[in-house]
Image 1 (cartoon, rainbow, N blue to C red):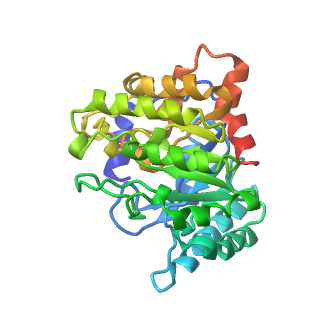
Image 2: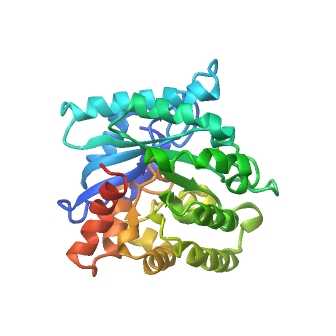
Length: 337
């Protein structure tokens, strides 16, 4: 047991409404073999979370640079990851490891900045996992002032409005692939431009568009929220965009849960971040939203049980039909599971 897991046990809750079916549409699998939130997060590790009390019936894997062979080109590395995850999905689908179908959907990566040359890479992804491969995530999360860490992918500035990126992006719709958008809140205007240029491509917003609370955004929570609210309102008008509700317990969000002596309860998590959830639900509507765990990244701040408890507490007054959509049906429909 590592120090993070010991800390999470300082506020151990029982799962609320343990029979409610859940599809977790956002998690990672990796073996980075270095100090991180979790050095490894493979099948036994995710099963420890999905079997901790909630009724997780299926999941969707999101790219994270796992199993990239350093001796391979980026064209081959992104395929390495899909091969790796498809193998884990096959293991899970055997039924030997429990009822949860881990990685029933797979979202990989592809260098869309290659323009038309990315077409062959997309086709390889589909051939590797024809039943499971659902889309591409291409990260834009960076900030030019140097006080905010870029994501692992180290994207260039303005990638979502880059002409070569658009050329590559155009190859998603003909293959019925969705696009997973991961950016920081200052880049939401660029995502709006992208969504408007490609209205027939399904775009899935990750982590509320990454509201920042560190670096040059430290102690600017109201200013950040005001900017975010303005642009998330505009983004919601793009009918091809849906939103994941979650992924806001990362260190970059600035809530500093991980610095407290005691891990937060589900209620504490939701009460502190409620306005992001409620505003997104109000703007996008029930049918265009789904809850996500973003594990193990958000594990720095909370346990899997407490996180989903928070989502259930947030929606305790929603109708059964609305909750079924938010916790399960929207995800399985959007990802065509």
